[in-house]
Image (tube, rainbow, N blue to C red; front, side):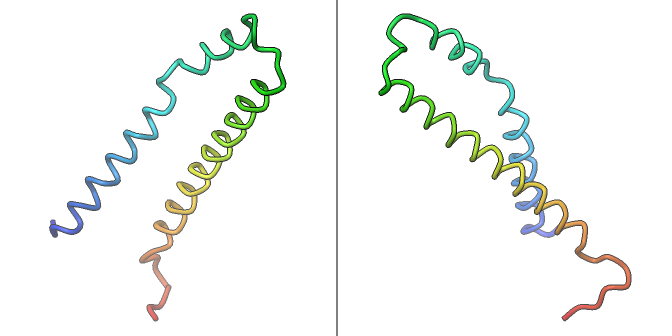
Length: 85
């Protein structure tokens, strides 16, 4: 295998492991308990944590979409009947 292809293969494997690792942390389950403790009633706390939750969800959505584009585009490379430019 070509050295550059080996590097790409290693990168894809690492990315795959990173995606697998995203679901392993139980921190958000803990956060659901934490927000019900006394002191989590102010507008500031709700704005801060709510904003961060929205941003994190947007990042996850973007990662999922990016993975879909990567796979879809990769499947199209070298498809029979296509001509090279």
